[in-house]
Amino acid sequence: MRPIPVEDWRAFLSLPFNRGGRDFALALEGGRVAGVLTSTRIPAAGASPDRRHFRIVVHPGFRRRGVGGALLRLVEAQDPGDPPAVLQCRIPATWTAAAAFFGKRGFRAVQTDVEMERTGPPPAEPPLPAGVAIRDAVPGADDADLLRLHDEGFAEDFGFVPATAAFLAAERAMAGAWYGVAAAEGAVAGYVKTHHEGESTGWLNALVVAAPFRGRGIGRALLLRALARLHGEGRTKAGLVTEDRNTAALALYRSAGFTVAEEEAAWWREGTGAVSPTPPRSPAP
Image 1: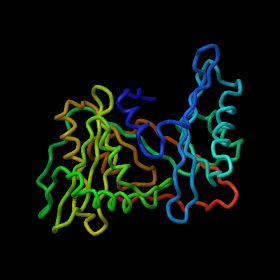
Image 2 (image 1 turned 90 degrees about the horizontal axis):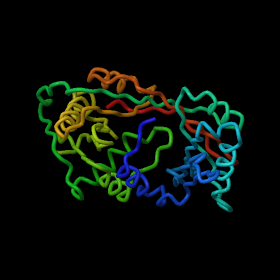
Image 3 (image 1 turned 180 degrees about the vertical axis):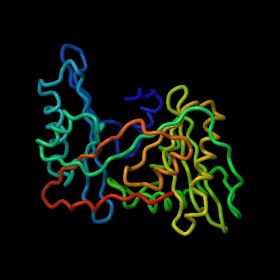
Image 4 (image 1 turned 120 degrees about the horizontal axis):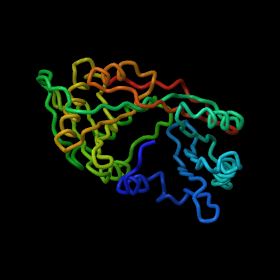
């Protein structure tokens, strides 16, 4: 697992759904940290139920001593009188002990995310597609288009929540944050978002192209522009996450030199009255 810089942790805490970390917790023994819990309540999107998204990490020296179970019980008790219909968490796909832990407690794996990375100079940027220009997003003026594209691009993803102005503001507060948009035919046809992580890594948070503009090379143009920008900012490594079912995105990223670093499984447990999620599918960039 990669270290989290202090500035990124603070930006993470500031995201609206994290409520400033008030639902986070530490398991302590004799002043030592035995386990860490991050926990977020995510409001419903459309007909979907509210969700409690969490992560539990137990120090190796304290495993098999009930720490993970105690932190999970804390999660289950965090919404008294107003329980969410769904609990969800993500774990590295190689954590077989964690998979067994959640499997025994009624969770099921619903999606696999693929973390990819690349190092070194980016590929050269080819000429932009005819009629396409890439520019910096303008805060305020482009916000409605960024929100629209986010919701269009991720609406069918597992755990989708519509973006809000507060979400955009928190994302812009991340270290080195940059939004770039592709303009075509008088409209914002797509966007890409990046930020810095640590001293040398750049992170590609999102890449979305509106449906009417797909298949024209706009996604690749946005990707290469983002990589060139990160490289110019001194980022020698770039990372991103996509779904294992998103074959078009995986092919695009591989063509730009990305390789798979890690796979992460999303686990889901439904409560009374929960709506079963549809099979996840991400649109191609």
